[in-house]
Length: 168
Image (cartoon, rainbow, N blue to C red; front, side, top):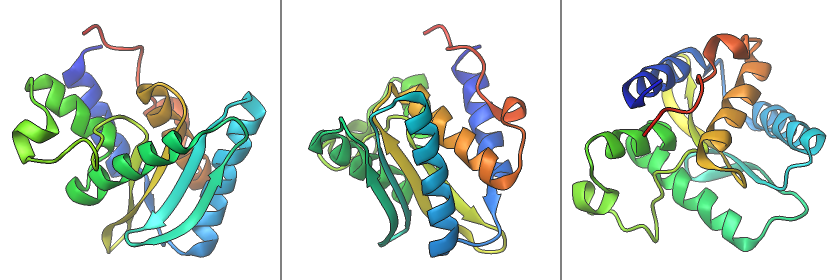
Protein backbone atom coordinates (compact mmCIF):
# COMPACT_ATOMS: atom_id res chain seq x y z
CA UNK A 1 0.00 0.00 0.00
CA UNK A 2 1.42 3.41 -0.96
CA UNK A 3 1.03 6.96 0.27
CA UNK A 4 -2.01 7.68 -1.92
CA UNK A 5 -3.82 4.59 -0.65
CA UNK A 6 -2.99 5.51 2.95
CA UNK A 7 -4.29 9.04 2.37
CA UNK A 8 -7.54 7.66 0.97
CA UNK A 9 -7.94 5.32 3.95
CA UNK A 10 -7.22 8.11 6.46
CA UNK A 11 -9.81 10.32 4.71
CA UNK A 12 -12.31 7.44 5.08
CA UNK A 13 -11.46 7.16 8.78
CA UNK A 14 -12.00 10.90 9.20
CA UNK A 15 -15.39 10.71 7.47
CA UNK A 16 -16.62 7.62 9.29
CA UNK A 17 -15.47 8.36 12.84
CA UNK A 18 -17.91 11.13 13.83
CA UNK A 19 -19.27 11.74 17.29
CA UNK A 20 -22.83 12.71 18.15
CA UNK A 21 -21.42 15.16 20.70
CA UNK A 22 -18.17 16.07 22.43
CA UNK A 23 -18.56 16.80 26.11
CA UNK A 24 -16.69 15.84 29.27
CA UNK A 25 -18.41 12.45 29.44
CA UNK A 26 -17.54 11.49 25.84
CA UNK A 27 -13.96 12.71 26.37
CA UNK A 28 -13.72 10.62 29.55
CA UNK A 29 -15.00 7.52 27.72
CA UNK A 30 -12.60 8.01 24.82
CA UNK A 31 -9.61 8.83 27.03
CA UNK A 32 -10.36 5.97 29.42
CA UNK A 33 -10.72 3.58 26.49
CA UNK A 34 -7.33 4.64 25.16
CA UNK A 35 -5.79 4.31 28.62
CA UNK A 36 -7.19 0.78 28.99
CA UNK A 37 -5.78 -0.23 25.57
CA UNK A 38 -2.39 1.16 26.52
CA UNK A 39 -2.31 -0.50 29.93
CA UNK A 40 -3.40 -3.86 28.48
CA UNK A 41 -0.56 -3.65 25.94
CA UNK A 42 2.02 -2.30 28.40
CA UNK A 43 2.46 0.98 26.53
CA UNK A 44 3.93 4.17 28.00
CA UNK A 45 2.00 7.00 26.34
CA UNK A 46 0.38 10.40 26.83
CA UNK A 47 -3.31 10.92 25.98
CA UNK A 48 -5.03 14.25 25.35
CA UNK A 49 -8.70 14.72 24.41
CA UNK A 50 -9.90 18.28 23.88
CA UNK A 51 -12.35 20.66 22.39
CA UNK A 52 -10.17 23.27 20.78
CA UNK A 53 -8.99 25.56 23.55
CA UNK A 54 -10.35 23.31 26.32
CA UNK A 55 -8.65 20.17 27.64
CA UNK A 56 -11.24 17.54 28.62
CA UNK A 57 -9.07 14.47 29.38
CA UNK A 58 -5.34 14.09 29.93
CA UNK A 59 -3.24 11.18 31.14
CA UNK A 60 0.46 10.48 31.16
CA UNK A 61 1.16 6.82 31.80
CA UNK A 62 4.17 5.55 33.71
CA UNK A 63 7.30 5.69 31.55
CA UNK A 64 6.43 8.85 29.60
CA UNK A 65 8.53 12.01 29.64
CA UNK A 66 7.82 15.72 29.19
CA UNK A 67 8.84 15.25 25.55
CA UNK A 68 5.71 13.14 24.97
CA UNK A 69 3.59 16.04 26.22
CA UNK A 70 5.37 18.35 23.75
CA UNK A 71 4.69 15.97 20.87
CA UNK A 72 1.01 15.94 21.87
CA UNK A 73 0.90 19.75 21.90
CA UNK A 74 2.59 20.06 18.50
CA UNK A 75 0.47 17.36 16.82
CA UNK A 76 -2.70 18.84 18.29
CA UNK A 77 -1.75 22.21 16.79
CA UNK A 78 -1.66 20.59 13.33
CA UNK A 79 -5.21 19.24 13.72
CA UNK A 80 -6.46 22.59 15.05
CA UNK A 81 -4.90 24.37 12.06
CA UNK A 82 -5.81 21.99 9.22
CA UNK A 83 -8.83 20.06 10.55
CA UNK A 84 -7.17 16.85 9.32
CA UNK A 85 -5.34 14.15 11.21
CA UNK A 86 -1.70 14.95 11.84
CA UNK A 87 -0.81 11.74 10.00
CA UNK A 88 -2.74 12.82 6.87
CA UNK A 89 -1.02 16.21 6.90
CA UNK A 90 2.37 14.49 7.22
CA UNK A 91 1.59 12.03 4.42
CA UNK A 92 0.49 14.89 2.13
CA UNK A 93 3.70 16.77 2.86
CA UNK A 94 5.78 13.65 2.17
CA UNK A 95 3.91 13.04 -1.08
CA UNK A 96 4.70 16.62 -2.17
CA UNK A 97 8.27 16.56 -0.82
CA UNK A 98 7.55 19.54 1.42
CA UNK A 99 7.68 20.53 5.08
CA UNK A 100 5.32 22.53 7.26
CA UNK A 101 7.86 25.34 7.32
CA UNK A 102 8.36 25.42 3.54
CA UNK A 103 4.70 25.11 2.60
CA UNK A 104 2.95 27.01 5.40
CA UNK A 105 5.65 28.87 7.31
CA UNK A 106 4.93 26.80 10.44
CA UNK A 107 7.87 26.16 12.76
CA UNK A 108 8.49 22.66 14.08
CA UNK A 109 8.75 24.08 17.58
CA UNK A 110 4.94 24.45 17.52
CA UNK A 111 3.74 22.00 14.83
CA UNK A 112 4.42 18.31 14.17
CA UNK A 113 2.90 16.59 11.14
CA UNK A 114 3.42 13.15 12.66
CA UNK A 115 0.72 10.58 13.32
CA UNK A 116 -1.17 10.50 16.59
CA UNK A 117 -3.63 13.39 16.54
CA UNK A 118 -7.08 12.86 15.04
CA UNK A 119 -9.83 15.43 14.49
CA UNK A 120 -12.99 15.02 16.55
CA UNK A 121 -15.91 15.75 14.31
CA UNK A 122 -19.41 16.18 15.71
CA UNK A 123 -22.43 15.50 13.51
CA UNK A 124 -23.95 18.82 12.48
CA UNK A 125 -21.10 20.89 13.93
CA UNK A 126 -17.93 19.76 12.14
CA UNK A 127 -14.45 19.51 13.64
CA UNK A 128 -14.52 20.78 17.22
CA UNK A 129 -11.52 19.15 18.85
CA UNK A 130 -8.93 16.41 18.75
CA UNK A 131 -7.70 13.27 20.41
CA UNK A 132 -3.93 12.96 20.53
CA UNK A 133 -1.46 10.36 21.74
CA UNK A 134 2.32 10.14 21.87
CA UNK A 135 4.65 7.29 22.65
CA UNK A 136 4.77 4.94 19.65
CA UNK A 137 6.00 5.33 16.07
CA UNK A 138 3.68 7.76 14.27
CA UNK A 139 1.70 5.20 12.25
CA UNK A 140 1.05 3.17 15.41
CA UNK A 141 0.04 6.32 17.33
CA UNK A 142 -2.48 7.09 14.57
CA UNK A 143 -3.86 3.56 14.46
CA UNK A 144 -4.26 3.36 18.26
CA UNK A 145 -6.46 6.47 18.16
CA UNK A 146 -8.51 5.04 15.28
CA UNK A 147 -8.93 1.77 17.16
CA UNK A 148 -10.15 3.58 20.28
CA UNK A 149 -12.59 5.73 18.29
CA UNK A 150 -13.94 2.60 16.59
CA UNK A 151 -14.49 1.05 20.01
CA UNK A 152 -16.27 4.13 21.31
CA UNK A 153 -18.49 4.41 18.23
CA UNK A 154 -19.21 0.70 17.81
CA UNK A 155 -17.41 0.58 14.45
CA UNK A 156 -15.45 -2.44 13.24
CA UNK A 157 -11.78 -1.45 13.44
CA UNK A 158 -10.79 -4.06 10.84
CA UNK A 159 -12.96 -2.22 8.28
CA UNK A 160 -11.12 1.08 8.84
CA UNK A 161 -7.57 0.19 9.82
CA UNK A 162 -4.60 1.02 7.63
CA UNK A 163 -3.10 -1.84 5.68
CA UNK A 164 0.53 -2.83 6.02
CA UNK A 165 3.09 -0.04 6.12
CA UNK A 166 3.55 1.65 2.73
CA UNK A 167 6.83 1.22 0.91
CA UNK A 168 8.45 4.65 0.83
